View (cartoon, one colour):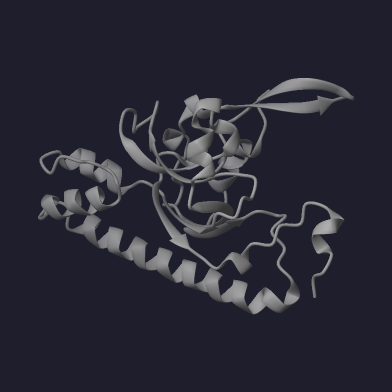
Length: 227
C-alpha cells in the first residue's frame, strides 16, 4: 500500500475552503520570530488572493478575449492555443499554489526547478516544479548542489469548491524510500510527494521569503542556542 505525504492529497479535497496554507510540522521558529512569520504568511495569502482574482477575471472574459487567456497562461508556464477555448478553460481551472522558498544554504531536501514533465496533463512540457533531493539521480547531483533556493514547505493553495485533484498528479514521480520495518531494512513504495509529483499540474509561482521564516526542529539539538 503506497504511503508518504502524497497520501494526504485526497484530504485537500475535503478542506472545504477555497484557500489554505500548507506548512511543514517541523518548521518551528523561535517565539521572537512569530511576528515575522505571521507577516510573511499574510503577505503570501494576499499575493495568492490577488493571483486568484486575476485568474478569475481572465476566466470570465474568456469567450470574448481568448488571446488574453492564452497570454496569461503562457506567463504561468502553460502553453495554450487561443483558438482552443475548451483547452483554455481547462487550464484556467487548474488549482493554484504560491510557494515560499528560502536561499539555499545546504539544507537537506528539495527546491524549485524547471522540469520536463514525464506524464499527466503536462507530459512533455517544461514546468516549474518542486523536486525533492531523493528524486535526483547520481548524474544530476551537481544540479541539486547548485540550486539557489530551497523549499521549506510554506505555501498557499487555491482550489475550486469540490475540485478533484487527482488529475493534476504526475504518477511517474512515485518515490522509493529506505525505511525500517519491524527492525528490518526495507524499500517502501510511496505516492508522488504531496508538493512534488502530487501537485505537478498545479499553476505554480515561487516567492522568496526570509531565511528566518525557516527554523526546522528535527532533534532536541536544533533548539540549542534559541531564545
